[in-house]
Length: 120
Image (cartoon, rainbow, N blue to C red; front, side):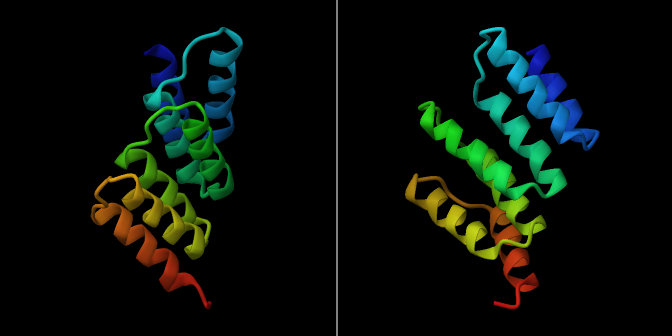
């Protein structure tokens, strides 16, 4: 719990690099990263618009057989919005639905925002 709080605090302070460092530290100490850990990490990346790393962390969740939830996807979609990546935002929105998760206003608005910023 302390590490998850620290990861969230790093994200709130816009220090996504430290948030990822905390996650690496957990791995080195053989501590289990759970969905909350990953959500905090993706949220930290979202705040910085680091969409590629947010998407990569989402992939790690799936590789580790953890269930991504609506919070996970909303943060990743929002990162794509901030990174002006409408195609990736729409891809993640579709993936959310494929996983039988119901998108909410946050996910839809982020995807719409990403599309509205795009000239494609």
